[in-house]
Length: 65
Image (cartoon, rainbow, N blue to C red; front, side, top):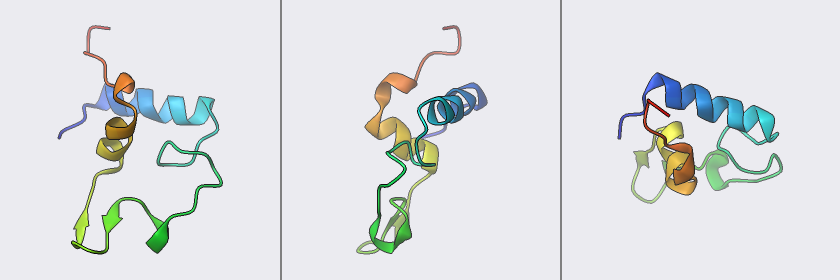
């Protein structure tokens, strides 16, 4: 999934406004392996913005909104 720059900026502002961690979750959230973006079982990594949008689809808006 490709995330456009306007959506990335909107996500970054949403994180800042809501005092969230870089993954859009409460600041005290702990992750096995240190990040939710890497699946140790499969060895696959996920883009940070894709991860956030999967959990918060309302953040994806068309560019004309």
